[in-house]
Length: 291
Ligand code: SF4
Image 1 (tube, helix red, strand yellow):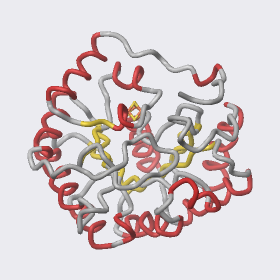
Image 2 (image 1 turned 180 degrees about the horizontal axis):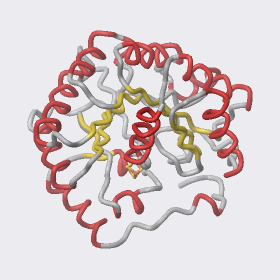
Image 3 (image 1 turned 180 degrees about the vertical axis):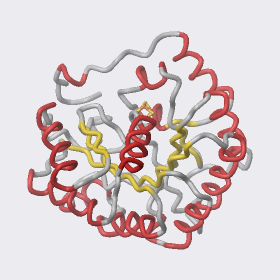
């Protein structure tokens, strides 16, 4: 439950309809986790009714406890080696042209789960050669080797969120670090990948700090950026400092495109990292092709 009343512009579509039910049945029958459910995403009604979901691999228990995130924290369960094939099959049955896959942080594993990430990307690619694969990855504690293991599996888009401005990293992301996230994105860009990142508004950040975070992402070579409103998953999570207005989101969109030169900026109250990811990718491809 949120502690503050939501403004009207955050009213999302309610979960309903046959396609929504099909998506749910597919997720359940393949014994998969989704960040849509685990993070209590407000867009489930819309995305699942369009037949898209963001699959979350490596379990649904995270080794971190970021104060913005609804995913359960604790000691993760054993690795599920059948998961990559089930993810690949679910992507095929959903008929996704663009699959977004994410994971919990697995700081308990030496490689942070990178080998499972690579196996999943390869399984999805093998089964769905026409599908673009976007991976929303954890920071692997800043280690390059696991990151390269993921990149060697050749995802189409490497996504890793900055989440918030530099000053709020410690209270909001706890163990993650601003410079580490920028370094990860810069490394992926250096290897020639399309890179993507995102921030939330409403955590107490100032305008100048938002502008700086966007500048830093652009300097790290990020191509696609998402900007959305933070929603408090429970009273135990970080409080909402403010509701950013739709007009403010438009301003940040224009700033990102016109002043900083991002390829795509998806900016709006209900925008999440994977929201309309297929359309962002198509727009980025189109803009890159015509550049
Ligand atoms: S925005 Fe992403 S996490 Fe939310 S419902 Fe859509 S696919 Fe799932």
